[in-house]
Image (cartoon, rainbow, N blue to C red; front, side, top):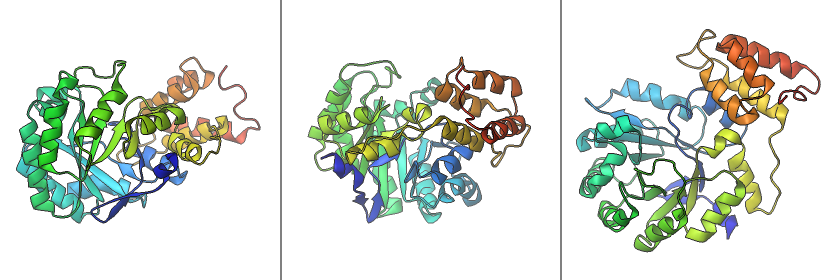
Length: 334
């Protein structure tokens, strides 16, 4: 059964992997895209949300936003978020013209700022809006891959039946569910898989991907087998193991995962420090620092040195010097 995760799922004549990187605002962009893609650690991209507010973005702006993902040569699902259905639908149409493989409607983001604007997870308070917006996207985009990302309710999982009914009317091709409610944010919950099973039972004919707390291959395969979902989105687990999607695929074949070596981690961090569009050698290295903290630990020698360096240029140079040393990683955790 886990081998099914290695087979693509075809929706509206578009093939997508069943193991996908989840969208991570502030992470899944820039040098992270090229560093992950060049290593074969992802086989498609799911963008963080593009907020649609005062108007439909011009084609040039959409092109600039989408191009780094398209440059990977991998299928791209473009995620949009907002409260104006017509603007969202027209934006989706334009994204398909620019080469997106699919468009995803974000009704899941739990950020207080997003909720205050009535978008993201706040949309779960109005299931009818979700169904109307999905139908309008379909009217504008035709037989193209449309997805919706939600949580298991706003206040309570008791909202799942009403959400499922709205999604049944809206008829997206794919539903992705983070098994917490909006109010639960990211706190531990005991019944996440049960909530995914509930969606599966209520929406048996809809392609369903699950996400939440997938940090190891075992987490992924247990969720998949326990809930009968069709695929997985892996997000925060990639911060501590950027090769996690590859490891899950190996586990599906009965092959023991190969841990990312210390040298590979340093090379990965160096690629992250390469200035991308909108950044220069003098830009802060906070993004690289965040990944260094999850890969090596905030108490490591490497992390402490990167804190001192502060900028991308010196960070790039320093990591390059480490890679030139034999056994470059022996003391990085000290």
